[in-house]
Length: 317
Image (cartoon, rainbow, N blue to C red; front, side):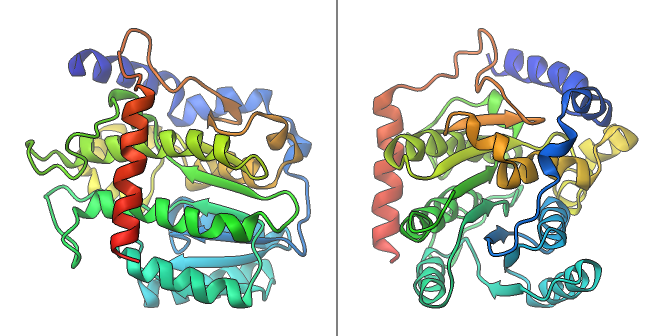
């Protein structure tokens, strides 16, 4: 079944996820959707120092938004902040150094943040794909700790902050790779199965889709969405998937093309006309399962994921 899913996904990707797929889809975009100015609105972008995150932060800054960059590497983040200020002319760019793989650090960051700042939009962009099983200092598998638990803790902690503001939104940058994975709650940290970093990453991205759907039902005052940016030429892809990057080469999307739907979901009034909790690709909600792929999860499986994350979030608070 995994072989079928992977083959179907790759064929779909060649049609839809490449640069030509974006160019085709963009013919249906409404150009005015992103002709907006957002002074007075505050946006948090995790992983905002490179790739899709930096492209997103730059465009928000150019539209007058207050931008909070949440990054792990201080020197790279300072460089990104300076570049965004220089190119946008916007001085309201704040930098926060946080390792999202360490839940205690995330909890502490939010406690401090909410004392000084407001927030209208959270963009969960940061992620990692570690190809050999590594543990954090808390003993957690690093991909899961960053991509799933980190996103869960940050979002859960910030929901009360978001709910106080007008038009609050949460956008999570997932991946179409999640289409090859069925939710696995029996071994979420890859302790008992052979470790494949690409499949672990795809599983984390499936978990993010499930979380988005659950949050949307639980918190109707906030508009939740997740999205697939397409196959994008970013530093992360070059580092973590060198073979894939070499194979696709010039067919990969630019960082700006990858960021387009993130920006649309974060900025466009039209985005919130769509139901909360959807998975988007090129500004449209799309199915979260491939035909005949048997990747649907039961309510019990989804509830188990929440229980696992709640327990870990409490343990490391």
